[in-house]
Length: 271
Ligand SMILES: Cc1cc2nc3c(=O)[nH]c(=O)nc-3n(C[C@H](O)[C@H](O)[C@H](O)COP(=O)(O)O)c2cc1C
Image (cartoon, rainbow, N blue to C red):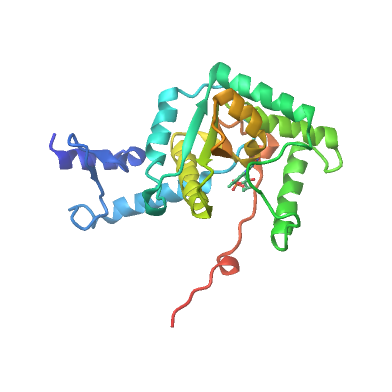
């Protein structure tokens, strides 16, 4: 089959169509002007629908099924996520993939460390200012309230809240746990790059029917992760992520969080 025939055929197979590699390893972009198919409105519509479905269909999931994820799938997800933009292509990400006994060992050690000193664990970088200002504080409180209601855990229920934190450190039973680190010498711009990379992972996972929960809480487990994964002091723990097939029968995986209206966060300027 000629290369363009391959492109068209792949494009018709929806999700698999977006990265079309030729035998020479080049990627064809059907929307590029030099591509004879860029005028095709159906393809564009399909691309918009699929992209929007992936973005809008991604939700943080806090409970996963006991269903394995092939390691090849994880490799595929990370292999495409690495195309994230980064400031001057610095690519600040470093990722540890935990499965099987390694995942169990780290989760067990993290829960133990948390139980030993629930209030004493400190993150590798500041999460929020001491006093979260408005309007962020009210969004924060609304979210926490909804999550607590879904989990059936009231704010005053310390035991229940600690049990839920432990679930965080068990990767919510997801079969794959990801830990992300970054060279400590880097600055704020690299966190922006990291966000792009993490979103790519989450969308690439969604495209494969998988779900995720990004978890900065893992930065509290610096000591456990450093020891268990031989992470050098020069790398800060940025976050973790649970990856697997979500259990959509639990209430916390069915929360409908509100997002801002366009006018609330956009200023269109045309002068
Ligand atoms: C940088 C970052 C860190 C997060 N850390 C955690 C975390 O530690 N634990 C958790 O349960 N959710 C965490 N989340 C998920 C957020 O709570 C979630 O994205 C937010 O409530 C919006 O929900 P949505 O992802 O379903 O749109 C994190 C999200 C981001 C982007």
